[in-house]
Image (cartoon, rainbow, N blue to C red; front, side, top):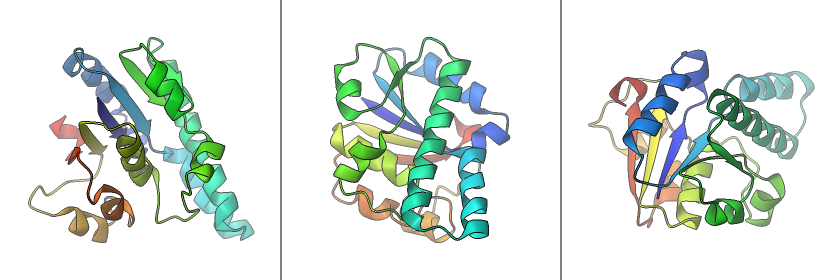
Length: 182
């Protein structure tokens, strides 16, 4: 199984559909779980939090809703992709390609902290660990220097601050690439 995290900015970069088509072409013999970033929806949460000064717990729940909206967008673009709301639903699915629409209660019960240090990048890593995935592929719209370590990518804000901790001691391989390299 491979987890493919599609950066939310792929939607605004107009390459989301291209990435979905490539997933279908490249991974037809493997089970794929797509994890989406929150994209423009998550950006609105950040703006609202600055304006209204609500706490990170509220922002975290709203950001997860942003990921759910992006999952529905993926489903709307590729009707044959199954939408799954929980780890159990993913495990039980017979579908070839699944998009994860994260359940807030499941993540809260798993002890995922409500902080902007943890974004969809780290949630994809958490899911890859829970599902015992073989690989986590993170696709970004940002330029990726493949000589940089994950820690250096986190320092530059390409992946979130908690990502390195989430993949430490993981058995799956991790690749972070630019959309142009996919």
